Length: 281
Image (cartoon, rainbow, N blue to C red; front, side, top):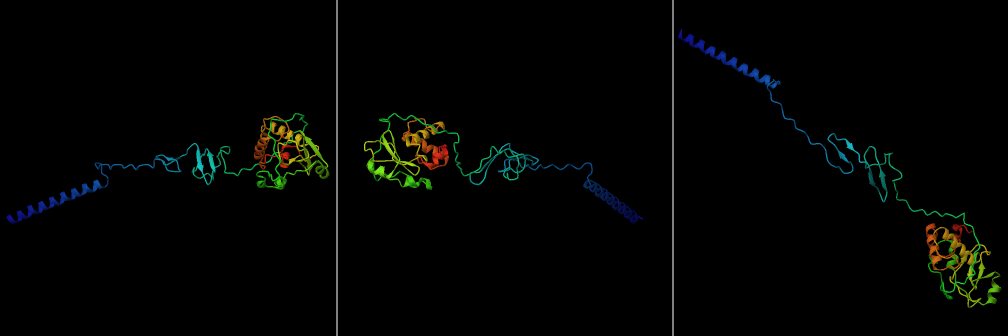
């Protein structure tokens, strides 16, 4: 009887322990399935891609590209683009259409276009006054050559490259040239569109420029030709001196400046290309 009672008690204790273990397992399974008392996990915020990225502007937290109002892009050479861009990558302007053309400059080669003055009218000037004391007369030099002429390119400058002064008496000049004029007492002979100093014809004559003066028309003596050149240069703002018909230093400097601006050889002389652009031919 005692043995039976002991067995019964042991059996009951074993049964109670098994039931308690099953209740603990059930509660743990409920918590794993998201039961109401489960604590929430902390939220980790990833840093946004903020800050400047070279060539791509600034990104905000949503990673949307914020375009600058003006883009300065330097490509190859000296090419420079400037203007507003409405969208796309500002480092690639090839696909953009909203680029201001007036603010865009290109590395172009300078093209000097020659402009002919069609409004200039040749006139006759009174050149009766002697230029004594205002200019320094040049002296005869049989070996003289026009400085820099060998660098002037083109067939219309060959006459300056080949020029050499000649000294002869009146008889020689008259027998070789049938057209001779006097400007301020200095004789000039005509040859193929140019006036040249006739050195020796009048040994006491003063010349203020030693070289050919292009006129194209023998009716225009060298004094009138130079005077009209001075007038034309004066009208265009290159010459501020007196219209006196003398190819002096100030006139030659104005000629060289004008010629350079026109894309001509800056000879500082009265040559054919210059008279063409001035409208005198």
